[in-house]
Image 1 (cartoon, rainbow, N blue to C red):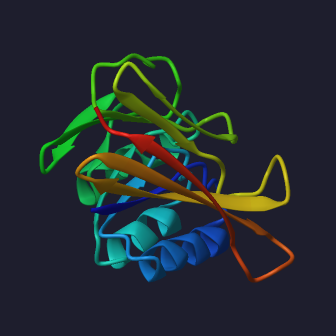
Image 2: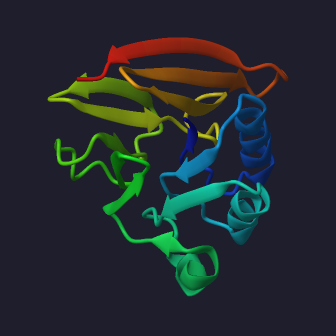
Length: 171
């Protein structure tokens, strides 16, 4: 199973579209957005991706409250399940505990991943390239005994994504 993870698009729907297309090209079957979409255009891109997606409100998404039903935006922390894997999705990293198999968060604009107490923690970084000239995302591949995190980042002045891979044995 491959899950595309992104966060902190802010008003950069152009970068969001590039990231979503890249994740789809890498085989993403689902999309997870950890908030701060900020504009409806970013929600439309998720919807038009034709992939099953889930997203939560970020601290800059107040203008999207009226669209929560149309685009199924959830309040954080939002718990869900894909197959037999439990997820906790949030924007703000306030609930970072091991109460799910995978915890996804955003807000800090910094990529990070770790595996602690049998829980995978992932922050995909920022799509918007606000704090650095990189547009970032993650493709999470879940195998029977392994998590593979492919961290993708693209200098906004180039067209190519670079990749770093992290592997954790699932227990």
